[in-house]
Length: 143
Image (cartoon, rainbow, N blue to C red):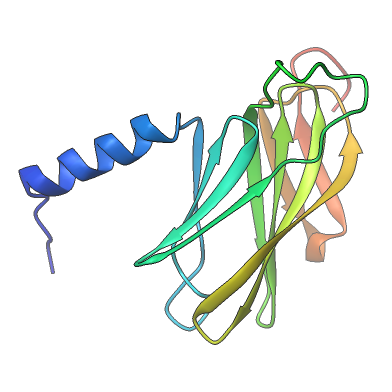
């Protein structure tokens, strides 16, 4: 089945992405594997959007980071098993955050963001072997 984007749909998507100063967007697993929707990584916060649901959660900040300096997400990876899933996102400072959604059936109630680790900024992130290993492809350090 092929869906055609209408001019109105493209206009709405452009306005949404421009309004939220989009840097990265992450597709959330759906169709029985999760609640579906999209995570929009904006400057200083992450937004979950699905149908009429919209939840915003700020990123944890370093104490020494000036208030006027924003946090931008440069990379992400996802991990999924039968019962759960999570996302690892990396900021421009090298901080890695674990993002998980609190949901029942297909309704998201909240976003949980936890500081995970700090490594050099990567070109690509991959979760391997049951979520216990993280491969970080970096241009400036050992992989």
